[in-house]
Each structure stands twice: as C-alpha cells, then as structure tokens.
Length: 150
Image (cartoon, rainbow, N blue to C red; front, side):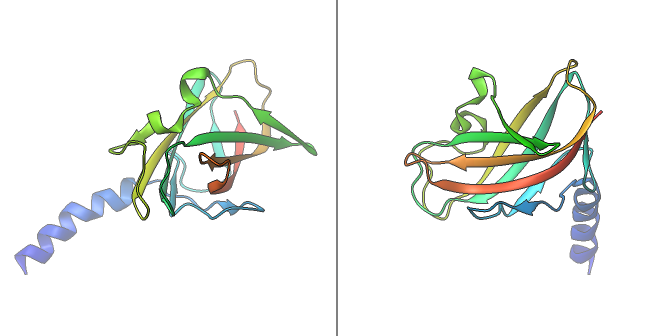
C-alpha cells in the first residue's frame, strides 16, 4: 500500500505539469505518440513574439533512420508558406533528447522543435504543420497545431 501511495505521489505532479495537447493529423504521415507544448494546455496555443516556441514531439521510429529533417509550414488566411528554421535547427538528429541518429526501428524518441517567433511577426491565428522527414524524404511523423502569434 505504501508503494502505491508513493507511486501516486511521484506520478501525479508529472501528470499535472505535462502540457500534452491534441493535434490534428496531416494529409500524409502518422501522428506522433505525444505532442507537448510547455505552457499550453489546449489549442490554440499562444506563441509569444520575441521568443522561441518549444514543442516536444514523441514518436516511434518505424525503420532505421540515419537522417531526420524537420519541415515546418504555416497556414493562415488561405495561404500556406514554408517556415525556414535557422541553420542550426535544420538537422533534427541534433535536437533529440536522450537519443542520436541513426535511430533503430521501434525506438521511442523525443524531438525538440525550437520555433523562433520573431517580434516583427504580425499577431494572427495560424496552423503550424511539422513533418519530420527521413533519409529518403519519407514522412516519419506529421501533425498540425492550431496557434496564435501574440
């Protein structure tokens, strides 16, 4: 019984502090197992200007992955435009937590997307789409997230 109470005491704060949110499926690709946006409990998530928006993406590799590349798009007002990440963020293998490429099949992985939200951006509602692509440009995982630039 004490073990059960101890586990509950340890796990409850982690569940309360977690910011796992519901995301939408892309046209192609599978959803990640979990998407966590710190500070956002439900969509649309606020993305403050002048800061990096942090998105933790948990997924399971379906095959060996030697390359992992993020592709981000922003959709608003009927337009969809590519969002070019800074050079140091274009290799998703460098932004994995507790793992590194190559990834093995069935390996559970967390990728950290650090999305710069510039002060010069207009305040607007948008949909952010993240695709992680492999060495063959196949989609590893993909999701869409409703957000507001504030």
